[in-house]
Length: 98
Ligand code: FES
Image 1: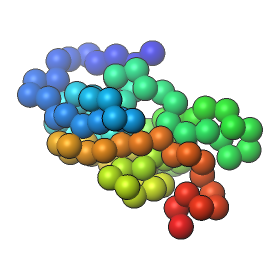
Image 2: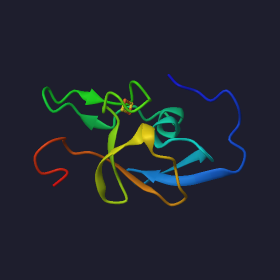
Image 3: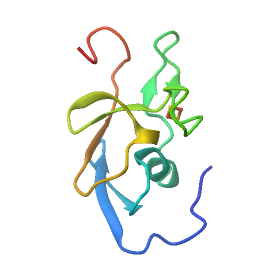
Image 4: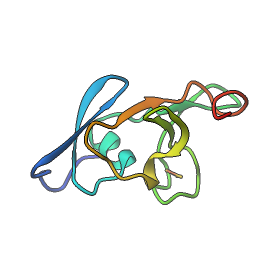
């Protein structure tokens, strides 16, 4: 389980699946979600198993989420912003991003 090594100071508030999450300024969406205990961001396109942030550097694409209505955003490459609406991807592939 991920945990913060330091406090977050003045929080940046956004929502994940409609639930409030507090992040530190400069956090990526993936880091903020992991620190808040959210590890399941989308189902695998092959097996349906839960997928979540893995590499945290933009290589694996396991962190895809919908941000403010835009699908297929890499949570590990996106900095949190106040009021951001982050949602799980229903699935990856046909229909979700088109
Ligand atoms: S965690 Fe691997 S691309 Fe985001």
